[in-house]
Image (tube, rainbow, N blue to C red; front, side, top):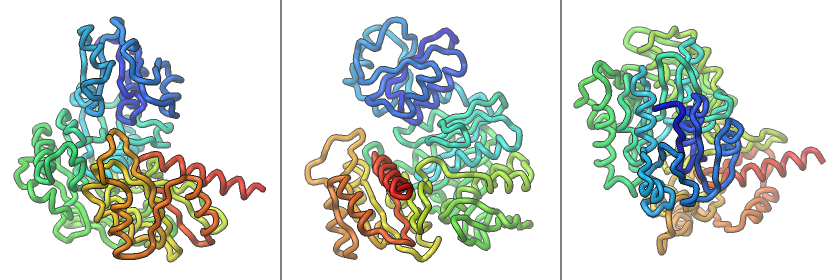
Length: 460
């Protein structure tokens, strides 16, 4: 692409889109785009030189634009897409645009239903600390990358979060493919779990000749097809059958300690300043990458001990007066289970979860599993469903989860008004409590409001 080109991003404020937009801004392109609301992400892009419109409108698309970038979340009736077609402007899916940037590099692509954002950030940091100056695209804001979702390096390496939503990761051709896990999700896109597994198989199969497959060998869904992939393979996990085995796992004081054992050597005293056994898995995937790239263990060990969580991935937002408050992006029953178990194993205090279901379809498909996962908490406040890209489905409400949960345990209540949730928490909390705000929607704003109240009370 010519650097004089004008690129327009529909939904420029999304995590994936904003990283691409920032890449092109930093490389001298003219960048514009649209989104529904102003956020810290759009403000960051404006500060870098982007022109942003709020609301999708045909008048935003002019013949000065050379390329329009979109995702599957953009529907056929989007007025900007219609106008771009009328003007004959090149339209490119985000995944294809990402592939154009990274496929010619030594590409490390991190896939999986859960954990890929954290694992991508871990691997990206490792390569930075090893002096390899990688290009990085990750699906979350990372303080290590100046709070953005990307990092711009001039080395030969690229580290990319490979998103299975709308099968977009099939545009990537990795040299190292990481698969963290596979679960049923995005059933508005996929027919069933078998369809999901087959698409992950295609992702692995599309890797470059001589590529490495790094995968969690504890996951039966991955193992169901991995033997059919004609590539070098490195399995990791807690099971003895894995090539890399996690041993001596301990969770103490908001941190993890463990060792990684291969067939001949034990790599001891790995420290990770995060919680949850799933994060030990993520960091072991990162270790496997270090072995492929021949990065010394001391470099890996130092890098991983200095890693801090991606924004909203069990992020500690407040710790004072015996109260700890976390902001967590978990929005699938498997993720919810992993996060809540990690919080539970940390110390014996009471665990309170404020959970906002994400999507009507996901609630419909997994309400029983959500009820089981949330039962790990001592108290649960359930919010109304965050619709995101979906329209309401008749009969699908948060009460599905509530009614299922009350069959098991009477520790859940549905509270519709945000101020009422804050009032309940402020009245009921006590020293020793861990409070987690959980979900992929705007529950994060409620978490911020709660933390602000606590901090204000401390100052008075």
